[in-house]
Every structure is written in C-alpha cells, then in structure tokens.
Length: 340
Ligand code: UFG
View 1 (cartoon, protein in one colour):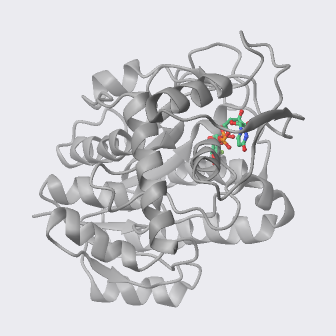
View 2 (tube, rainbow, N blue to C red):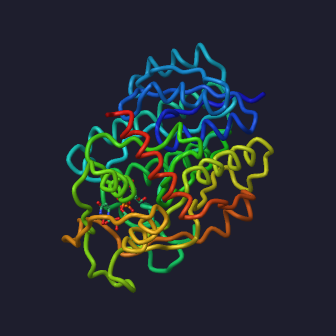
C-alpha cells in the first residue's frame, strides 16, 4: 500500500482528498498546522472512511520540523495543499504569503530530492491565467502577471517545481483549480471559513442561515450576459478525485513529461446571479442580496477547457452544480446547529 503525505489535509480541499485517497486504498498521513482548520476534522474523516488518519501538527515554515517528520515517516508521494489562500490578505501581508507558500514548498522539495521521494502533486489555481484572452481556458493559455502575492505564489510555485523536475528525478503534477464549492455527501466535512467568508458560496450559505444579513453582488456591469462575473464552480468531491487520478498517473508512470499541469473544473461557466438563482431554487428559499461596487482584482470570466484532464487523467466531474449548492447549504445548517 502506497503511503501518501497530505499537507494541509485538514483543510477544505485537503480533507475531501484524504477521504478519496483512503477510499481508493491509499495509506494517508496528514500534516497540518491548524492555522485555518480544526483538529476535529480528523475524527470526521474517520467517521466517513472508518479510519482516522495518522496526523502531525507541524509548521512547514520551520525547516527542522520538516526534516524531523521525514526522518520519522516514510512516504511514497506528497500532495501539497498547505498554503495561505486569501487574495486580499496577501496584498497586505506579502512576506507571510511568500514565506508560507514558497518557503514550505522548497523545504518539502528538498526532502523529496534528498530521500528520492518521487510523486508530487501541487495545488495550483486558475488565477495563474488572469483574464484569459480566450474562453474556455486551455492549459496552453499564457500565464498572465499575477494580480496578487497569493496568485504569484502559485505561479512561482509551479516554476520552482518545473525547475526541480528538470534538475532532479522528480515527477510532478500541478492541478489548476477553478472554484471549488460544496461539501461531502455525509456532511461530516465541508468548508469552514474563519470569520467573514471571502468566497461567494460560503457567503451565500451564511446569508441563507442568517449569520450574514445580506449578500453583496460585487458589480453587475461586467461584459457578461447578466453583467455579473462568470466562474467555473466545481464540486469539491469531484476536485478531490482529480488528485487520486493524478497520483495514479504518476505511480503508473503514465505521465508524458516529468512536470505536467491540468485544469480542474467543470467546463461550464456560471455568473454570480446564476449561482444565486440556482441556490434559491435548489434549496427552496430566497436570498437577501443587493448589487454593490466591483471588488478589486476580479476578472470578468474564467472557466476551464477540461479536455486535457478528461483525456489524460481519465477524470470527469460527476456531480451537478445543484448537488454542490445543496450540500453546501446542508453543511452550513449543520454547523449552525452545532454553534447554537
Ligand atoms: N462575489 C460576490 N460576493 C461575495 C463574494 C464573491 O459577488 O460576497 C463574486 C466575486 O466578485 C466573483 C465571484 O463571486 O465574481 C466568485 O468569487 P470567489 O471569491 O468565490 O472566487 P474567486 O473566483 O474570486 O476566487 C477563487 C479563489 C481564489 C483564487 C481564485 C482564482 O477563492 O483563491 O478563485 O483561482 F485565487
């Protein structure tokens, strides 16, 4: 049984990926510093899969801690989620973002090189494309200058991995996520934003249960059919399964280059207003929302061409937008009950 290290394995995408890896028969070990997650997620993963994963609370910015971990635990591959991810915060705190998102990546890759650990999967983002000139966005679309330090850490991260693959015997895949939403069908794990949510769907669900008074639609004067920006919203369980597919590709040596990158989305774009309407219809409720000013840094439209991932990873999305929006709401309701 292959043992896979999942950094950031208690976070939103990480926890769903741990479940899918366990379901696929992998042995999993998690590193998480709990900076944006809760240790209870471990038990909740255990409730779903019947197996509470091995876990280490480690700060990956501390090189000695990283080394100590690898001295203790042997792994066959790594999926690296651990990173800061708030775009606006990254503008205020660039050095914290570079230290965490780049420093930790370098330390992990050094350990991989020194110990001949081969398979590496990196959480990248469609933000590397900026406002693409052509839609849907293929992997051939040029990388645009990053709009934020966060976005830059994803671009630089990919470059560091590319250079490392060239110099060392490492095989790696970067997955460029579009917009992950939803929760696990068991409702044991889901998205747990700290404080006021920055992303659309968590803000919608918190508004729906009354934690937030009103949802702001950030601009309706974009060049789209209803004037609101378009994104590719992908169910987090589908996204999680893409990691299993990518890992198997590396393990079975099916990769065509030692560094590859794939778009992970549904291939469909939806506007903010379409998401609001779909959420209302699916969950049979009315959301309190109003149009506000544009948010700085938002692109008009981004949705994936997933042909490459479908063919090469033999991966397709299976869940609908409605399923994602329903699970997001059910998950939110469950959290709210727990709080009361
Ligand atoms: N939006 C609102 N109101 C809100 C929140 C969001 O109208 O309260 C709008 C945004 O303006 C945008 C859309 O909803 O048009 C989606 O916004 P999100 O913040 O949910 O997602 P983004 O596409 O901006 O960002 C996501 C990730 C980032 C990542 C980016 C590109 O959150 O980490 O995709 O990869 F960088």
